[in-house]
Length: 169
Image (tube, helix red, strand yellow):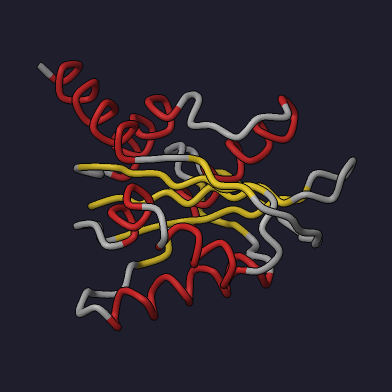
């Protein structure tokens, strides 16, 4: 039964999401550590990540929704996906089921959603693109309580990769 629910969550989430692209350049820094439970508790946010999360929460408040709580573990899982996309020169939701199952298991999430994007210059630009996409906007306005984000730059071409994961915990 759990597998059926996870597959259903994956299918609904995958259907609701699309990948975004545009152009850009930036830099970042990160540092993470793990604890024995498997939860990542430390994550160092770059300025773009902090600004994007702030913009998402400001938007949510402007439409009458509650702010989302930042979870370092979710940002770490987002970072893993950014690194995967950079290494494989793709923008996609590959292995979303594994990320969502990890967040469900480690954090006790009831549901998980994901937005990805590629090559936007600013946090405002990526947020605008997501809000102009029905699937991405649905996640931003979704019945979630927590979130995390990673914005990583491809050192070869300078393009940014964005993964924003939402969870209801």
